[in-house]
Length: 206
Image (cartoon, rainbow, N blue to C red; front, side, top):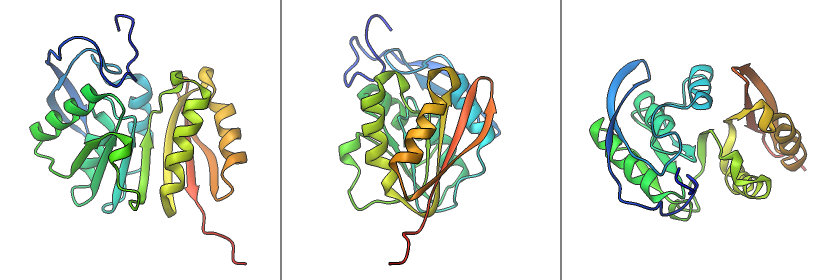
């Protein structure tokens, strides 16, 4: 991307929108994308794997797309759960603007596209779906997951898609060691990607 990372807060250059034809939640749409974000020309393979493998999201509550890009995961959550509140979180301001535009195109007024610090601290999530930005580095990735996974409601699941050769197995081991209240399993493997499922367990009775 012209020497800049898709996780830059303010991508260089003017936002020049362009059309993108995609299939989401079983239907075809024409949405808006632009340069300076993650996978601007298509739904990337990891996200495709995630969307094809996970069960339908909860019908209500707060649903989180962590690292939303232009919005394929958040928009799918919103299309499948019209009574839920969907939080599309990213540090990339251009990505957030595109999510807002795409939600407007689809008539989805229950999508909140915002930076991490703009999500109220008292919001807990009935699910988290994420194609996390592995290339930000291990420390940054771990810090991000330490911030958000504890906000799962008890009995709820987080679904993470991670490329096998970019450390999915080591990430699973870290999650197991780091979060005593999460049950972490490998839900599936497809096209070189692992789907990790992390379920929030109830705290043990003292």
